Image 1: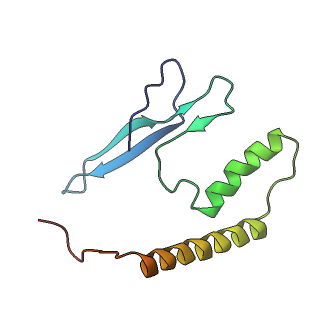
Image 2: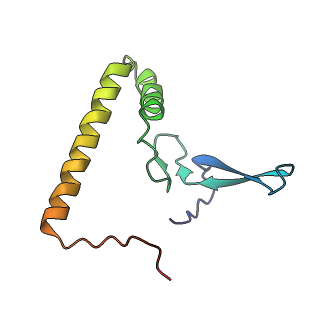
Amino acid sequence: MGETPRGDARPCFHVRSARVASDQQARTCDVSTDGAVSAGGMVRGTYIHGLFDRAGFRRAWLNRIRLRRGLPPVDIERSERFTQRLRKELDRWADHLNNHLNVYLPLGRPS
């Protein structure tokens, strides 16, 4: 979490968070900004954790960049293989940490 002093740079994302009142009638939508984009648009920064975890979003983001560079888009199968490999490696890393560290995961919320 953080806050970026952007100066004149434009935000990287506009984040919408919707809230529904308890009576299900009143809905509000708050819009905030996150991150920053360089003047040329080639560098972007964000605090949104897990942004590229969803294969469809990651593929669309990368394909936009690839098309600008004249490269062919990444196909769905290749993207899904990457996602499977990433999950496997993250599970392997989690197992390694669990085997070599005294990991304490509380079951409930601290009071």
